[in-house]
Length: 225
Image (tube, rainbow, N blue to C red):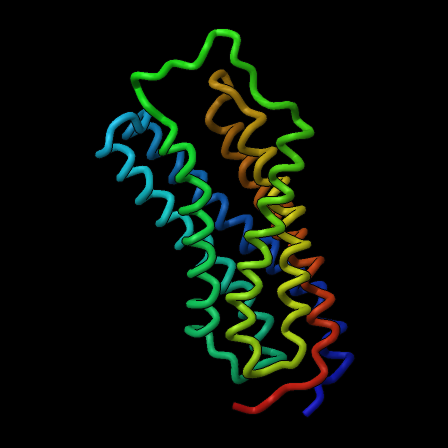
């Protein structure tokens, strides 16, 4: 059966808005957890603190994935009524949790109270941060889109487009998230860090929403279960 093209045209701005809100709230939740964890745990310089920090990262992925899944499904259910929320939630949370785990492991692995950085240590240039974040987003976005496509392929054709568009969207989205995370320093007030994080999350959601909205436009065949 074919979807109503007018329906998909009207849904596109709603899709972009819901992706933005979902990621905005998801990053707000994750940033709040990170600030609370840093306040309660401090520097993760032993195995116990590293385990707690890793657990917080996993829970952050669960929260972010759940919120994004909820807001995305609010729109998807209108054009794919057979795609139930539980399925979409599972295939969104799994890559979100894995992504957060992979993102936090390097810093936890390298953190050690016996190793002090040299006094002349300088952070990498901004251009390297942007390029690295984009490449990471490209890879994680492709993985994210591939996992979600497993839920979509029973209902719509050409799911490879969903994978590609997620890769592009998250390439841009990860740049916003990394900029929000790396630009503050130890003198930056907590409220500024949180504000930057949620703005970065909203822009990331906007990037993903705009990129994947092309897929929403192209949905013209729905398969019954």
